[in-house]
Structure formats: C-alpha cells, structure tokens
Length: 110
Image (cartoon, rainbow, N blue to C red; front, side, top):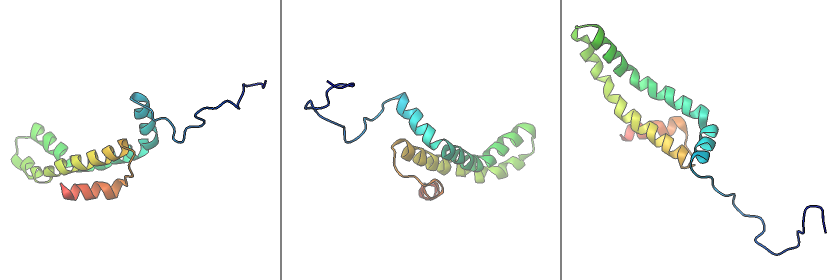
C-alpha cells in the first residue's frame, strides 16, 4: 500500500488532450489570452468610426450642411465592422488571427 493509492490498476491512463472548457469558463480563458489584442482591435475599429461620430456631433450642434461632407467617409463603418467581426470570430474559434493582416484583408473583401 502506498501513500497516495495504488497506481498499478488498469484503466484509461492520462488523457491525450485536455478536456475543453465550456460556456463562461471558455469565454474568460479566451478573453484573458487575447485581452490586449482585443483592445488594439477596438482602437483600430474606432479610427474608422471617427467620421461618423463627427458627422453626428456636427449635425446636432449646427444647422450648417457641412456635416454632409462627412457622410462620404462614414461608409467605411460597414466594412470595418465586418473585419472586426472576422478577427473576433477567429479568436473565439481558437484559430490563428493576425490583427492587422486579417483586419485589412477582410476590410478589402467587404
């Protein structure tokens, strides 16, 4: 008899792959690993949202139609959202994701 039990018994042994976490535990594990990359992604997305934000502020503050000029670059928000979604999806599915390269490729495709 040993101190921690009998290790000579037949059985499965050691699992080859660790058991995958589920639900909120997996979310916080992925978030903890990619937290800084997600912050960089948020700043990159915000750069594309600046014209839309300025347009709304100018529209509310003034009655001058100069804010209509900002509608032209505000069409960039849609492809930027699609690109951000693709990078976040790759992070959540544990795939390789290079932030700037994947963001730019999916931005150009959309």
